[in-house]
Image 1 (cartoon, one colour):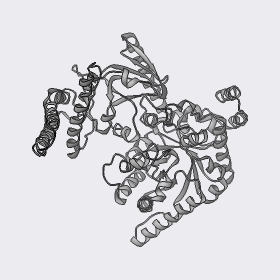
Image 2 (cartoon, helix red, strand yellow):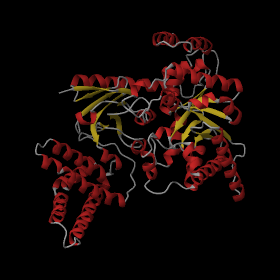
Image 3 (tube, helix red, strand yellow):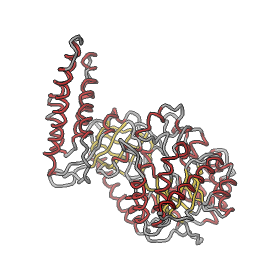
Image 4 (cartoon, rainbow, N blue to C red):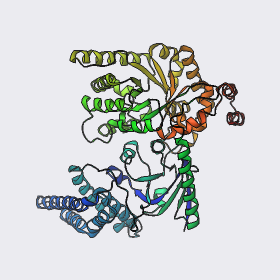
Length: 585
């Protein structure tokens, strides 16, 4: 029977497909489709892993000390029986052969189904045996992880009649940024999570991929079953499970309309972003990896306003990338932009973006969002920071590059950062390696203290970039990753608007370039508001660029400035709502 779940709309559009439930354990493995000619080999890979675990169990039992409790041997026997059960042998193999799942995906899919079945058992002892199954599966996954196989580019699955199979809708309790990156080049068509808000990383990545998503859908991962038909209405934050034929047809029609809208927007790609009163606006792209530069150019971006370098450091199980690996990634992005400017932010980790090898440090912090993160962490690891700075500087020899420093708040942090950049330049001089000696250095404005110290920033830095996501979080004392207070995260709060407007106004007065690179920049609803504040440089995910351009070419900045002056003097919600309506008039 159809039923609907309501959440927070974070990425527009309609997605229709089969649900794939991701339990927390499944988030640690790769998910990809295996090529037809590699299916037998993938089955053998799973069998080999199971054989290795079986041999390990035999060895453990053989080496048990004579005085070991009898339960120890019985425990190992139970694990051996579970290992040989067809639920972990024949059935995962069938998933590989019929659905083309990779071994890890097939195994965790079967595990999730078994966990649901065990949860429904009334006998407490039997219900608790699911822990044994989890432990056996974890052993197999460890063996598979020890023999890594590169994930090939996915090929869309075909239905029996030759038509494209339905898309896959990921349903999870929550998905972190590193996990989201695994799905970037796969066949997933939409995301539904129990947790999250408008600026959670699930939401941000979904928008960057232009994939419909709904977050904050309470209990979705418990109510939706594996392979259920699911519709995501990304505009409304609505999730429809097991829809009727009539509802399915209606949403397929909406999908067609959405496709036509995208085609119409494509006509704007090569049109300059100029307002009705003749002001030229720069539209730049936010990217996570060097290969995203192609999407930026395809969307008509005039440069990269934010290259999030931390994604080079994620999903790694060993050491961090060395100077050469980083240099090649940055150079590839610069060369891919064919002479257009590329702004690269130094590593911003901590809080909701811990690195694999450092997760424990961040998790033990009482409040990671206020702890050792971004530039604070970089300055605490000068060796690592110098490695990144040298790689960034070397990339500047291949095209226009700007360096962006996150989360600056103190004069001492600015001094230390500039000193380390100068040191990195000297090190490259000693090695005879080229770089741009006049490279521009900018600061992220994402802490209220930075706004209150703007004269210092305008004096010491070459440009500014407003990170609205964190600025809102720190201004309103809202943890945007905390579902309990996500509804209080408000980009239109008068205090937030005052801080953004002040930064833009003072930077413009000083002749220092200023951009907005947070989620507000890519929200068409916010475009006219930011234009009225005097913003002339927007940086957003490529998928959002054309919709923002459409707003710009129909905007009159002279009129908007007058309306925004009224908005900035509103403090009561009703007054503010009334003034905001005038922006669209």
